[in-house]
Length: 317
Ligand SMILES: NC(=O)c1ccc[n+]([C@@H]2O[C@H](COP(=O)([O-])OP(=O)(O)OC[C@H]3O[C@@H](n4cnc5c(N)ncnc54)[C@H](OP(=O)(O)O)[C@@H]3O)[C@@H](O)[C@H]2O)c1
Image 1 (cartoon, protein in one colour):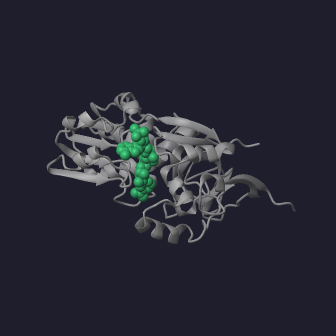
Image 2: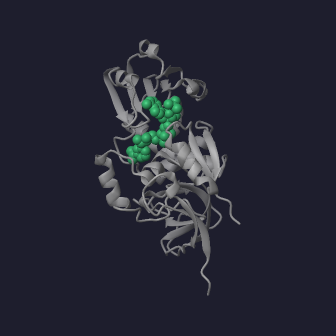
């Protein structure tokens, strides 16, 4: 009998965006503890760029290569984020049924750049899954899954209280735009730091104040903060970032989005679904590309200046 096939993006070696190839590969069959998801949308995230390009500081690169492959990705189909519909389930599956609209991340299993992806329903290093927010598209859900998980784990760790002063450094990126919205929802007074072109976007998310990190005169806008959350990570910096780090109140905290590994938490996905459906988090998508333009999408995100998320639509023939 002829095997069923599907369209997928494979990454046969580490390198520039051009290493990515669209190929016809075997369609996966779910094991007894797996669901099979018909993927309607995936994303190009900071993580996908690191996985494909491996342009990371050596202290991060070595552990990452141990998990995802030393000389080339062990899982040739890459892609970390997905949103789609469950089309088949293994006999041990309890949480989901065919027809459920789900979103999540695939952890070390990768494989989201494909028409179909099989994964466990339980949280593990191979990802996490929940029903998607019902009021937004699959593309928008990929932004909530990745940016939301990154922002929420840092915000939860910070124990922000109502009325506290919070500064989000990198307020216009995927995790930054959600961190601003989460901090506002918790009643904080939020200052967002971004470049000139993104000031209006960050204000529209509810930030009380904005600071332009490219403006030499912005240093005098820096106040004392109960929390400084670095949402762009340790590799990106500026003179202003160093000032923000030193602008903490006596009991204030500085948290970098890079402090902990991204946790695969379906509990947090459910919380993000509820916050999105209640209107507390609105999705921000910079661009949406078809799967066929994956190289162009990687080139764009690799420049490091996306606003909110970048999604990929997967059309099924
Ligand atoms: N802990 C983990 O396991 C884990 C997992 C994944 C990612 N991460 C970290 O999370 C970071 C953020 O990911 P993300 O997808 O949310 O970010 P992102 O969307 O890639 O961030 C893009 C934003 O960064 C801003 N930016 C670029 N250079 C900047 C600079 N020098 N100073 C201030 N802002 C700057 C850009 O704003 P402008 O255009 O206005 O400059 C842009 O809006 C990653 O870079 C990585 O370090 C951590």
